[in-house]
Amino acid sequence: MKSRILMAIVVASFLMSLSISLSSAHHIPAQDTINPGPRGAHAMVYDPYNEQIVLHGGATTGFHYLGDTWGYSYTTNSWTRLSRTSPTARANHAMVYCNSTNEIILFGGWQVGGTWSFDCELETWSEVTTSTDPGEHHSLAMAYDPKENAVILFGGFNSDGVETDDTWKFDLETREWSDLAPETTPLARYGHVMVYDESIEQIVMTCGNTAYQGHQQDTWAFNASSNSWTELATDGNPDRLKWPSMTFDTVNQKCT
Image (cartoon, rainbow, N blue to C red):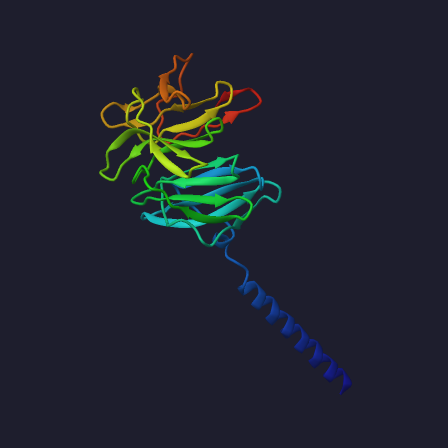
């Protein structure tokens, strides 16, 4: 009798533990809830304050636009869903990290506007109210200029679907945009790339696609202090690319 009772207890314990295990397994997040999942046309930038990559938005197949924000840690080799309050869903936008204010500035995107700031300490988004801005731009490029303490924007498509050659400045102190309208500009384009070059203290821009002259491989430097673009004569050029990536190599003091 005692052996039967003991067996019943063992079986009941096994079934209970099995039930708990199955229940726990049922609540394990699916793979697409613990990382951003497949997407394109998103924006990413390195946040040195938290030593992580911050990703926002993009689009999945079928042009479903996304508005989520994620952080990737090299230390833990893991993704974390960040601020639940995010800019509206968008794709082909631009983001830059600003050292002086420890924030990420976001602008642009397909059929959306507005300027957004991501506070790297609080890891929260807030919209920046400005009296004017570049208007709808997507497939644009931006770079942070520490000398001017400003974000510089160039090109992209406007709301009419036309490539632009406009140059705008977002002052991080006044929190306002201004149209710089320099006398000389690179060809209007989209899908180009810009980065601040510490060695010459200017912003370098290259590649992209133009309406009538196709993919470009020219290289330009923008001096924000003098509000001037200068085409650079380089020893070799990147291939004619659209939507490339570029960063500044602080060790070798060059753009790569």
